Length: 160
Length: 294
Image (tube, rainbow over all chains, first blue to last red):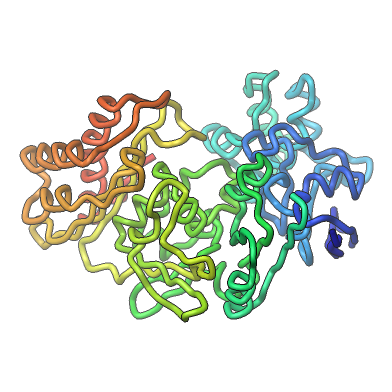
């Protein structure tokens, strides 16, 4: 089977890869590009562990074909921090212990960043609905919600 | 799945030719939130994928002749952010918004929801109630049919192998019109409808209903457009007697299955309750009130 050549942008840098038509973007990121931050939880769009931004839109990378990324821009969890400086969402997830096993965390970080970029001061209800597609079996979500609220305050310049 | 070919044509003609020329199973790809899951599970083994998203206009919303046209592959999140759609068809917007998570909203489309042909599809009852039409393109040219003529059974549509939906047309909205969609699920988010109900009405200056379209989801093999529910509303204000007739008409239309989500009796009763509540919201919106349904 002929592989397709795909030219795209990943975390701000141009990237090229070859992939098979049925390979999902998640498969490509993990197995071809070598970015293993995005996780495969369910492979059916239910758990959100594979969340990435595709041209700025939050999607499950398991529900996107690798070939569909041609000409597009992808942000994965690996691109959220600025060099050694953690993004406020990452910093607050650490401070609030908003993770235990960590498997859902990459997806939650990307989804939370997307929320705060589009809605800088979300209510708790808005946070919970926005993150309803990111399943966490450890935390009970409460610490995650607090971390996102706190990260929002930092991004708004209200606290550090 | 050996031998799968992915194509992303940039014109309707090219897409139709690809579909017509395929010897095996060819699938149209919009957002992929159903198709990729079906492929992964092995339920669907296409030989050809025709990704329609590069066809001009298929991801856009525009106004034409007083109505709105929504491209078939327009993601839910884009429809929900569109002011004109929110103003004219809040019921359609809230129905589409109920599909899946934020991540799914970034991809899922009206055409995918309609052509996946699940009886429980959330946006479909709202589309029926809205009297939307589907513009279908194929080898024989272009045709336009009411949306309720697309699904023919669970997972089946009336579209020929070489056809796909290009866009949906929403008719101009008369003054004093409103629509609503309600669904019942046992939790608050991320579940499949036990029952769904879409209602669209137009009222006169005194609040008397002059036109109505009503639909039910998840209570039959396909979403139902229920004329008897509309008949219960037309010519009346939304008083207790009208609501009772609407409730009875909804229950009478139900032919549901028993499953883990609900028994026949339960689904039938809930259909009547949702019809009452959705009608109230649609009438309120037609009277100029801003009502949040969910």
